Image: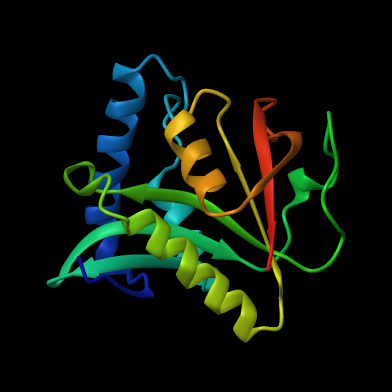
Length: 169
């Protein structure tokens, strides 16, 4: 599947919220409490767009993936427990990566990670950090397959724990 990535447009938010609703249902069906509290909202994606951090993956003019790539730092990454970051060099952060459930397993999420590496490299940055829910094993497997190393746990502003990973390239 040949996917291209572009900055998210405000017109994409309706489709993004469809993808988020599908992800929320997928988590709920598996007993994972990730994104069961109404997060992320359309306003979160609107802020990502305003900051220039939101991207969509498009195949045949259809949005099949959304993801956030930020180089603004992540306040919740300042403190890490049960481990430590690989370094303190500048890094990109991947957040809110969602793939159309009909397209899972086709390499789209991995293609987005490669897009993120290229964007980071273009900026002279050689580190990507990401976190995920403790029970989100598919995301943890994806992260590991792409060379990320488990660094410990971080705590979100909500108080929820997340597994934290970093890739140096």
